[in-house]
Amino acid sequence: VAVIGGGEETRNMAVDVRVQLDQAGNVVSAEVAKVDKRGPISPDTEKAYIDSAIRAVHKSSPLQNLPAEKFDSWRTLVLTFDLQDMLY
Image 1: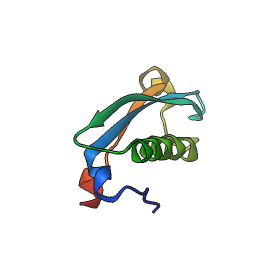
Image 2 (image 1 turned 135 degrees about the vertical axis):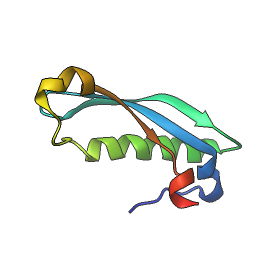
Image 3 (image 1 turned 45 degrees about the horizontal axis):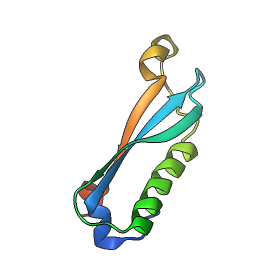
Image 4 (image 1 turned 90 degrees about the vertical axis):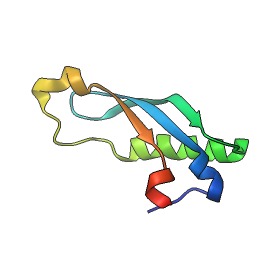
């Protein structure tokens, strides 16, 4: 498991990433939908956190076991990356 730098600062933000998928589950696009800052965070740590979330989405492609008949319900996903509960 890779952990981005920033230490305590990483508890101060969460990132929602809007993901567009094709019918095979491949990531077509991934962009920041929302950044939630819960305290002070440096610009460098914010950028690293966002870049890490986008990279994780692309590395997960293609998503598997998605029901083809429900493509309209999963073609666009919003994934939340929040380390607060995972690391602390």
